[in-house]
Length: 243
Ligand code: G3P
Ligand code: CA
Image 1 (spheres, helix red, strand yellow):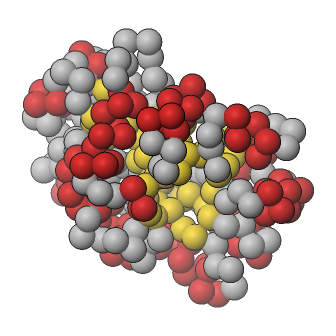
Image 2 (cartoon, rainbow, N blue to C red; image 1 turned 30 degrees about the vertical axis):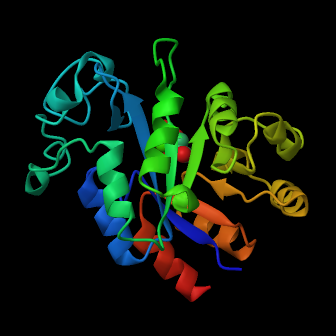
């Protein structure tokens, strides 16, 4: 079984993260999937951005939560990476879903970011959008917030959920079941051969994040890791061909 390759925040090593340019590039180079991050805006819309502030990746300042979607989309989310991307705007999750409908071979891993207590109806809106755009077969929801996963699972048990984690967990597949998750997204630092073996026996796909190092990519691919998440999908694809 070939290791699936997911572009982390798109092809974020070569394009500005979490932009349509980065997603389109990942698909163009042949990635199997894309990972992105979703936050809630001031007007309770779903915005694709990693940090809880706009400071690092746009020409604005302040919390994402203090901007409406319209305000966010007036910001330049590409120039911090390179001037050639100055037209990039913060995508809404719905815009990404529209594009996803045209690339049915692509899987989309949506990471729910830092679900705060004031993120009212956040999971509901995510589930409704997935159902409206009919992309359930392509989507995997992940989060470090496992309460959020449980909620998604209760709203629609047919949506695949994955626990994100960065510490050693004992038999994580058993724990994952308690929140309705059916796959594991561990940090590369806690991904040991025993984890891959145990997860395989338990029937849990493992998608390891975030690996850019060539030797580590080779090692995981040789160990038949089901999937890896990388900033450089093109490089990972080249390595996969060589193995
Ligand atoms: O989904 C894996 C990875 O994206 C989690 O970490 O900080 O890059 O969102 P981060
Ligand atoms: Ca992420």
